[in-house]
Image 1: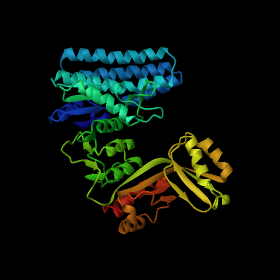
Image 2: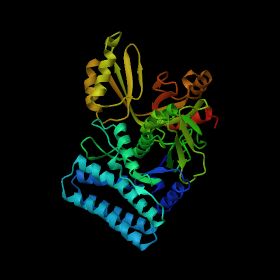
Image 3: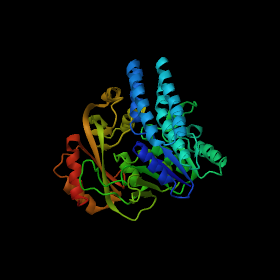
Image 4: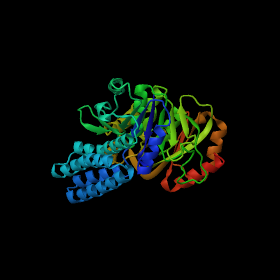
Length: 439
């Protein structure tokens, strides 16, 4: 059995949803299809929550009404038979009735998660109706019946495996299943989610749970490129990546793949393929345990980085100093991307300013704290590039004119990262593309 995940742009228009139906019915292999919300829907639902949190019910109602009109038009173009159109209008109408009801009750974080779940619920129900209209035998299985997270917000794979396996065993006559990405239930049984971009995570978790033959992630790009095609002209898709290489690229800014998607598939050795819904014949990118290509393969950039330097002559040979520094970030659940140390200073980077003020306040007793905003991490990724001399020389020769704030080298065999001001991001990506990839 295989897993196929389609993102918001792949189902964002009626004709694309038609195309998805063609793709999933081409092969006889049993499959589970994971769908995101229609493109733009999640943003609208976030806006509704924001309006309600700000006590702007009129603003929220306007967004709800506009979104409902969009879905009515979508249904009219998706379906051709009046019977199925009416069925779709009734089902979608129930979801918008819920959105109108919430205008009358007190807003809460739990309610916000219920609001966000509507996107995936509606997209899968519409797809379910369309498959029925064209006579495709299938079953819609609600993700809320098997996808769960623990008290820390982490997916509980054994529970997911047991619940999903039991669900599939009840329907051994079915070869095609459709479910929602992103949404789940938390440890309290409430509707929750796997955070932004979590549909990739859903697909990977399902693939791991059923030990799928492959986990296909379908988007509007023909695989992971060696550089950002929105910024750099001459880029090309990478045919193969190891799980480690893909993890580095996803974490450090490659937008096609959610960073959390790799881990579940890697644990169970399920290959992940990144494919293009608009160009289904393109090879795309295959991510697997072992690869046969080496050297620098791609570069990615992560924006919105904040650099924090703690400088203190007292830290020289001070036992436990770094532990105390890290405990501050752990206290505020703030991840560190990069770290460099010297005898008198420690520099770290974070990607969120949510708890920046209290973090800085708690770091000040350790020494002088300097904070730099608007930074970017640029990472060059490839198989064992940290051990490859000619690659290292080529990288450093290429970027010698760009002021680099920090370098992370040796922490990973597959990644060398540079911290630069955001103003140098484009120059850095273009320079590396030419000097390292000869493009």
